[in-house]
Image (cartoon, rainbow, N blue to C red; front, side, top):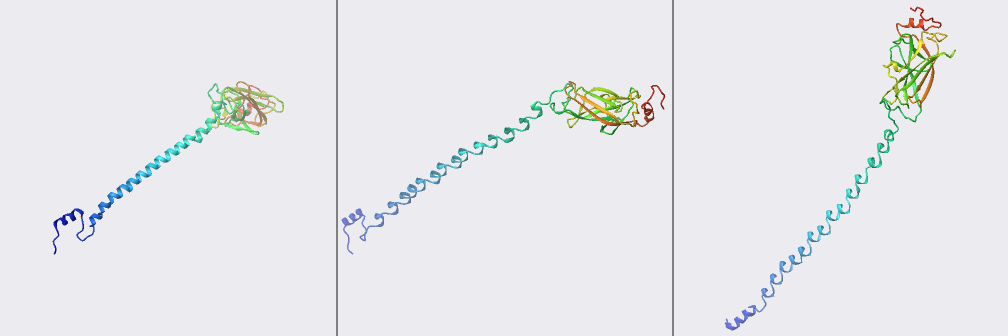
Length: 282
């Protein structure tokens, strides 16, 4: 083996020569010299530099909140049902459009009973009378009209009205008359009363207040040429408001009857044709 001079060996070391004559791998560049992932790679050119999902992504270009519902108009901004107007209050309910009280069609009355019906409507009513038990019943053509003994004596028929509509119920005048159709003679009585208002808004006499009924005096019979009982007569009823602005008359055919139990004999005596005042009766 030949020995290498010291000078050549030192020069070789300075120039980094391969003992075998080639360039060693470290001189040509290791992975770190040519660029590791860190030098040439991922951190510099990679995801963080070119934009991560957070850099390039959703927040910058607009999240749902940035680009979305509130800015372009959510249901409240574009108009909810309340903003645009709910139909019932804004469009007008029946009270807004005007009920009868709002429109002012019902005037005040002095007795506190509300007006019956429409002030501009036509007056109408039906006829009733007190029966043997002192409760009222309706009268129509051909009905029996009860002849009753009132507190003052004699015999009368209590005639009233019901189903009354389109009138001031305060201080109405109720006139009742029984007419002999053969002679034209009649007997009558007129009363002033406040009508009571029913649940249906219509008025009537108060049954327990017989003084509010017309007390048509019939007997003793001093006015008719025929018996009062079991004969046909015309019953006339006239209803008039207190200001006499509304008046209505109705006439029906009735047959008076002495039909109160225990009083019929005396009733027939004083109600017969030709009765002489003061004559004894059973």
